[in-house]
Length: 332
Image (cartoon, rainbow, N blue to C red; front, side):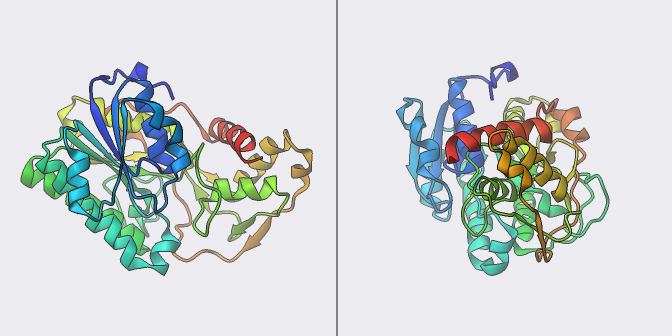
């Protein structure tokens, strides 16, 4: 994404934790294209070296191989940094159910380490990846920031605790914070492999391999799928805002439309079928619902539009076309 139109000062030095991950590496790439100095902190537990390999040739890019569970690594990474974009986390509801202790260590203890390091390093603002999972069992649609339910997974608990810690650090220490509740982000560089692969790249690789994708449930569950460039825009707007009402709060980061899983696969088959017509005839399978899954997710983005002037450019169809083109070129 070309972020120059968002008027981000190219003199800023920005730390991206989890910068070798799917979202983090895309953010790093965009910031570097704007001329910013970027430091990436990653332990490569889920991030991939190939995501940042081309960035290593850029003199404005610094890689620190470290772990947010170690305060000294966080302090090293925050040195001389203007802004922190905290993307590092152990994602996935199923992973947190299978191993709640590690999810808590990374997502809560690691998050607290980063807050302390940012505070002690006197960074201008700490912007962090929150999650739509915070809405929990709330059935109201669309999801509005001030109306949440009870968490449905250990992962959801960790992400809600992040918001609580950020609020306390704002009130107690004066650290400016902004939380971005991501809604089902997808796009280039998202890993299609592994037990905890996100649904879109997982379906794409199955279709490319002429395998029948399996939907958890009857296909009626819906999500506010959010293309990566919309997420990049939100992070940049969170950096650049000078509106005092816009800081020390959280925002939905989404497009504001929902798509059910059957419709999602239908679109993927259509777009991939243009490269390989055999994909058009692949059967969709249906399995049991997945534990901890929320049936429906749809964001209100009114708050972000009003306070951050958020203006997402990619709806599900535009985003999927971009993502499918990237996957076809890079996975075939």
